[in-house]
Length: 298
Image (cartoon, rainbow, N blue to C red; front, side, top):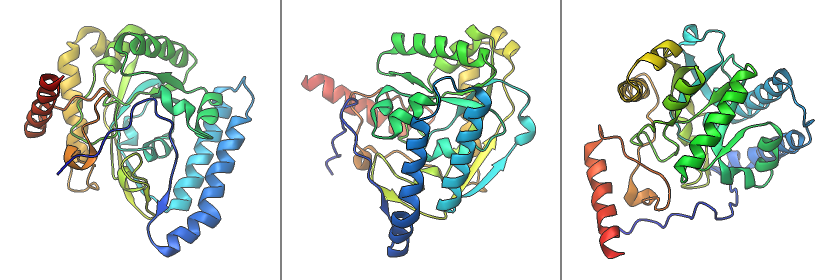
């Protein structure tokens, strides 16, 4: 089986939705699409000097409207672990719908997103005006600098910042990158780990345009890693411990199945920063053999 080609990171994106079933197509065409695009246009016209309270209210309302329209069965667990914040929030990443679900947490927050998303039609102007943070993961030094400076400013203003440690939506086997732990140490912040599973079935972008209604999603908040522990502990140990705890929660029998990466189906994502969690050793070896073959043919 020949894997599909991976689109270049800077390739212009066309956002397509393919609701599954005739009734879903009709519902999305009449109600869903107008709801989403009108909200994005309103976001793009928000005042430039938007305070945290107004940003949080707009985002949470948008999240509730879209989740309600899509009939998402969201189960939120572990709210007792959330204090006053602000936090660096470190969730698993399965898809765009992660953002909608995370916005249901009782914290004002902004998000780190790949820089090219800021060029998406309608989405880009909206998230720019809402003050979210663009970074380029394929340029580690510049990306880390932007993340550090942005986190310092956003957390300093009392808002939490969502940083997806995997940096990709390919699946649960993607490793956690070290950046969020390094930034937490430098800015003196606590990390709030979050497990998410089931969101990939809502909208399968960028793999397919399939859109589904009525999907179950589990969002599990784990105990925070205190700022003091991040200052004094070994960051590599904390990274691995957090990665395993979050993925164990996502794989629990009581949660919807998370997304699993299959490079023969999904492509190898050449040109993107993608490391496989060594706990998924079979896939890690397969990716390494593929990359060695690519290097050998260069």
